[in-house]
Length: 360
Image 1 (cartoon, rainbow, N blue to C red):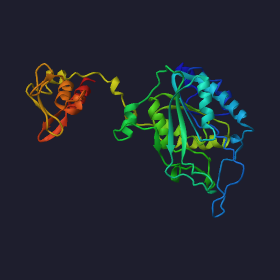
Image 2: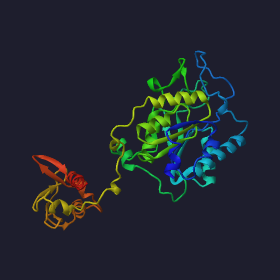
Image 3: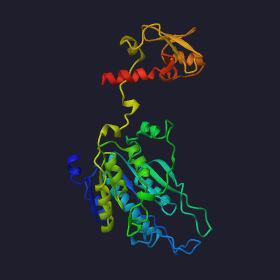
Image 4: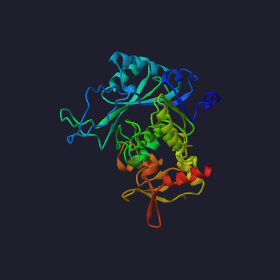
């Protein structure tokens, strides 16, 4: 299957997305990121208080006669996505209040399983110049798997690291695309709805692996392809407007080839080989009798030759003794216990990582 899809990858295909997706091999795509027409339903021109005109989306590709025609289009392209997506693949769809609820309902009707809705909070949104509604300061992304029981990819550790050690939340504060990143043509925006690379970076890094195939059926200015290339993923772009294909192709060609690919993957802790604490003792990383303390030096325990530790009142594993001295139900002993190295405390987990590296 990989050979069948490889001839399509790292290319932008000019044409209608449904027709092209229907020609791709079934069950061949790892991830789809879709930024479909929003069907904005704009009835009048919008002006700022200084009478300058606000550039909105007025292209034909965002024009639909009715909600039913938009729903028919949505069901068609989502059905095509479902056919080409691998059983353990995932789909991201972004939209606004104009369309995202209709898309969400159709996703569920087709059998997709919604994993999260993510709110993209814009810290620099366009104000509501008419002053008759709230400022639209966010868009919504729906992240879903193909089936309820799909074994989809979620790089939890990468997202936690990206968020300075805290679990990533479902509200993402990211600026809209502007400055040097905004692609322009003849001094004007080259594409009205260009998404920031930071948004795609987070979505792609979280739910795909190096070498995976990422498809974008509404490729536009090519942000998905740019980020996919930077993260050593393969991309397939589908775009119906020739001028956007040219813009996207130029953007992607200017992205340098990936260097050290090992820097682009964050291994899952669950996938790493288990290192029992006793291995540190038998391999000489810790000697029997070594004193371990907590970070505040309130509790201490001695290392035993059999890989257990003993406090003043309890003997057991590093986790059991750590829980006992704190009168807590559980404890991560690798993070709780520390070793005094020349006056500085070092968590014993650093020794585990050192041993793990040696075993590789």
